Length: 158
Image (cartoon, rainbow, N blue to C red; front, side):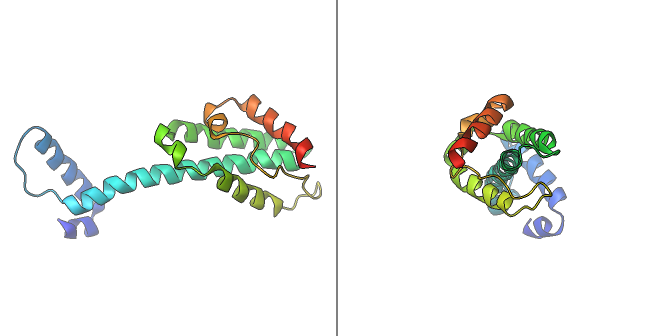
């Protein structure tokens, strides 16, 4: 079974799913590739968590662009893009992710990326030292509230 796992992952996964269905019906099956199956199930959770982390960081980047250059012609576009990243993050979110997502790290990385940008509008306005929203705010989906918190944080960043 391991050879098929390496040679044709799609076929392997279809066969493993079929074997698991048979096992669930009470049939005896001997060909389940337990080591690879366990690894794949484990990696599903890691992949979902990595995807949400990435989407949240991208949303933070776009929210911070609006803080750094509030009068830029692209400011509304950045808000739209932040929402475009938050929507799938909210859809993929699971409660167990709350203890596994390091919002401070995501924010710091997003802020570093934004500080490195160079726009015709000039240097960026100061960014808040810490993330002005919580994970619950980001997952909650209230874009007006998010934008208000980010813009209110600019006075404390100056």
